[in-house]
Length: 312
Image (cartoon, rainbow, N blue to C red):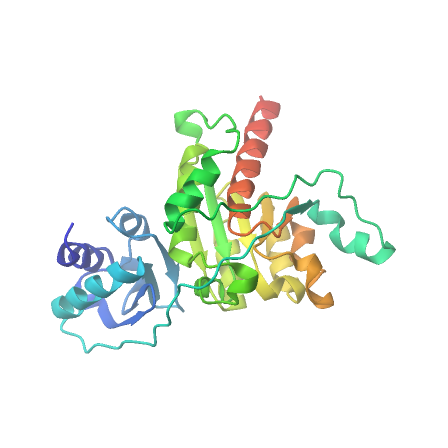
């Protein structure tokens, strides 16, 4: 599809030109404010060529995520088709040096208790992994890395395939420029593409990715998942260490959840070592970089398959 065709398709999915109040460009996102959010067709947006995902933005906003080059071309055509004034927010370069990660997996419900008595069970932690560094193609390099893992049986019954929700908290949209010595140079659109690829390979019917810097939006998204999604993978970012409200939301919906942190939070500041969110999750994966999402998707798929077999 051309940039103009993509822009036209997005306009149709957000209720047409008459429903669009404002639009803006920021880094990898086409931001839209609409008059009537009920008219937004998020599933249809996800199917548009080159779209990497969507995210809510307040009560009447939606962000459509593209690659950094594509979003500029789409935005230009979008502005032309809508006739709205252009608002371009600052864009920061995203190519920075690599960093390596180790992996540590713990049982989320034990995390704070282990801290309090000074013990921790690392017996189930897999061996550390690092990314190969012989290619400049991040997506291709990461895909090769994921393909090296032993694949679990990815198949569910066609009419019973589960839905997966991936929630990312504050500042994770800035991956690629956010403290690259800690979080690496992989950017957010690449992360979204990898999550969707991994979820598809594991047999999920849908993989919805959501990101917000606002605690209330994250809580709303968890609550909205009730009765819709079968599993949640959440990287709460800094809210892990402060938000009892996110914990309460996870407990309220009782959807199986896995917590992921890109960095090794155990090796950072003391305040990052405890996670309230982990108490609402069946597992916590830390320090594996963006590959931790792939491992979480695999573990969630295996859990849901086992749950289904047990139920039968």
